Length: 69
Image 1: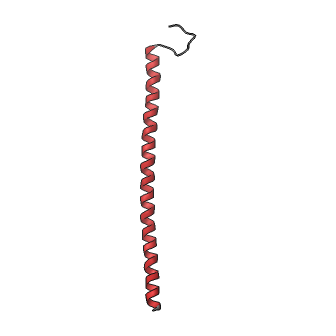
Image 2 (image 1 turned 30 degrees about the horizontal axis):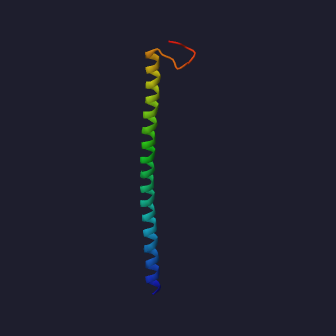
Image 3 (image 1 turned 90 degrees about the vertical axis):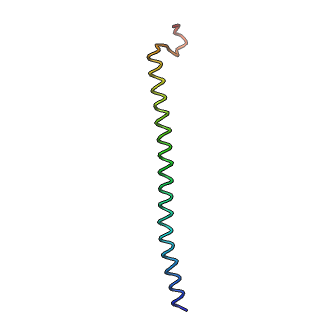
């Protein structure tokens, strides 16, 4: 009976280690996907900002209410 208990304990330990590695891999890939999406959104927002600034420069207009152009 002790051998069965020891075998089950060893099996549980193997499952815990293997399962832990799988969980870490899943969490790492999920975090990578979230970071990639956030980076994409931030890059797009930055490109929009630069595009707007270039548009305002090329248009030659100003947001200054004191300026009448």
